[in-house]
Amino acid sequence: MVGVGGVVLCGDEVLVVQRGAEPSKGLWSIPGGGAEVGETLAQACAREVAEETGLVVSVGPIVEVLERILRDDQGQVEYHYVLIDFVCSSPRLEPRAGDDAADARWASLDSLESMGLTPDTRRVVLKAARMTQDGEIVP
Image (spheres, helix red, strand yellow):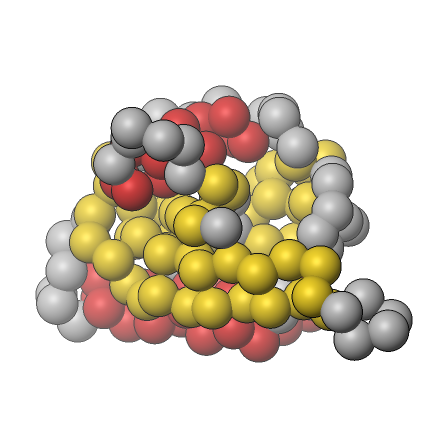
């Protein structure tokens, strides 16, 4: 399955959601989900962020492409995703959890490790922040 994620940055904060459904129920992550037939990846990213947080974002360039394979207790593949993460920008409005997100909030970049984000997610968020701070990309 092809999935998209939005690394929504505003100053030194990033928009995060708590997953309300499997896979990864209960974990904090960036907003995102599956691309639908007929929409571009950028359109899918904007739609997923809006569905999960209520915020309208400007979608910038791709930060990274990841592959995530999740297995059950017997080692069988349960989920296999190709994830395309985009850097995005938005005014710092209060998000509201929607769709399959249990919660949504702004988090400081310094708090990501204590929130329990996966190492891949934390790395992608920090990469996007570095790219925007260094002027490599402008969301």
